[in-house]
Amino acid sequence: MQRITITLDDQLTEEFEKFRVERGYANRSEVVRDLIRERLDAERLEKSPSGDCLASLIYVFNHHERELAARMTRAHHAHHDLAVSTLHVHLDHDNCLEIVVLRGAVDRVRGFADAVIAQAGVRHGKLYLLPVKAIDEAHSHGAVGTPHRHLHLEPIS
Image (cartoon, rainbow, N blue to C red; front, side, top):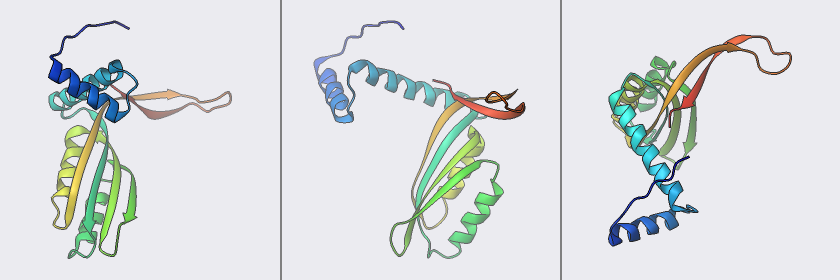
């Protein structure tokens, strides 16, 4: 680990300290590390749209919207290779919240998310992407594990 020193003007330091306290960080170093990771991840995603990612797509929709449920089901099935899991929550008599965990190429995940969020009746859609390094490897788990192949996803930063 390396130590770095930065200089900030008084107003920025005050805002930074307020942010640290509000978010519950124990020290400034943790805040700086998280902010740097966030920015580096964003840069990686911009520079490598076909790279691998994990993602969560969160959206609220009105299930009474004409044919929306059928359109959403078709979209999810058409992208079954991206979807890992979906959580469906009934918010009230009309609205539902869905959280979809996705993995795959950044451009395909974004394309799916954009198509879902653009559906009439979908509101408050948000996609969170985490760039990962995909490692397909053969190995066994445990003392008597049988060798097999599977995918490991390592966060990059």
